[in-house]
Image 1 (spheres, rainbow over the protein chains, first blue to last red):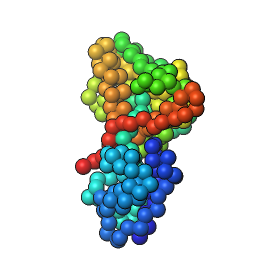
Image 2: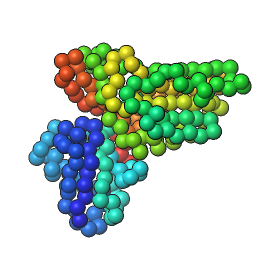
Image 3: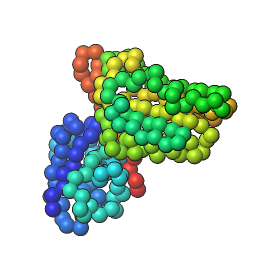
Length: 83
Length: 150
């Protein structure tokens, strides 16, 4: 299945979104790994930031072991810096 | 106000551009409260050795208002206060406010504590990101605190 990852913060420098092909039954961890491969090629300096980033579906921040079935769009949330 | 939430003792919101600093009083004034404490977070002209002209705030609006509401609810549950917090979305210039917090309580200790807790937690929990823009128009994204749930 295809999952669209929308970017925020520093990841906007890589474009507004990534589209990943993920196996059915994949977890957030699988998405993270697929994204690592993409970013390792395009922007290796952001790999550390990716490791500290979270994923969200709608208004829920997900855990790495959460299944992404039914969620075709995830938001990639780098470390936050409000205030 | 771009989006807001409120409870019996609290109000939170996101605004486009700089935060107004004259709208908090109606949300925290209370005849039983003898202390009002305010905090304005203001964009400064330098950061970490770099000159700055403005900050562009990137916000996940849905998650941010949810996180702000949860934070306010936690604080008014823990402390006998009324609480107001708003944060900017988009461009805020040096000298302008990007966050405004006001709290009131019967006595000063709880108002001070509520304001401090609100800004400290906002910085590590609410999905907002800063793109700092220098006087020469170069920019950089600032690092922050992870909100990963492991």
